[in-house]
Length: 188
Image 1 (tube, rainbow, N blue to C red):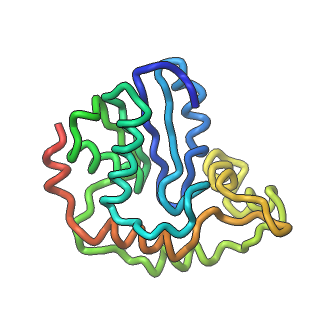
Image 2: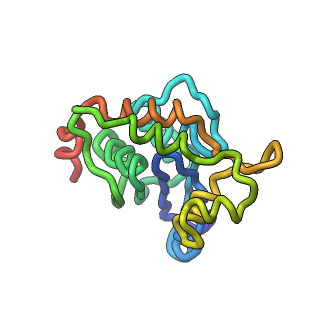
């Protein structure tokens, strides 16, 4: 998004995309260099990556920080991105000067009900006929609806999600399959 060091890295949640941070980036670039990327299986990244494990997501963030910044960074994550952010902070505290999480918490390893997620994402009436019909489906106009619609791609006469439901379900399954409270306890 631009700006000058120090760097802030923004991580979106499940089924999200980097551009959903655009409103935040507008005011944040006055204070920092703002970076965001599409996580594996999301947005403009590969739709069906071979590895959607927590380790793979963590490694992607570490790679970005090491290659794109004069570290350490402030790491900001929402939902699944927030969980990844705190795992990065626990594994590589040398890369992080601040951590902000929204709608995220450590997993307890008991798993989660993925049937509800799969049903909810599969229920989307895709392709959406228009941007306006997608906004209406997501309850817009609102910033939340705009974020969801911003993640759609126009193709084949309609607007489609930039993710595969099966990849989202597997990503979340792996995110909740192991407890990470010990990593949470290590964060300073």
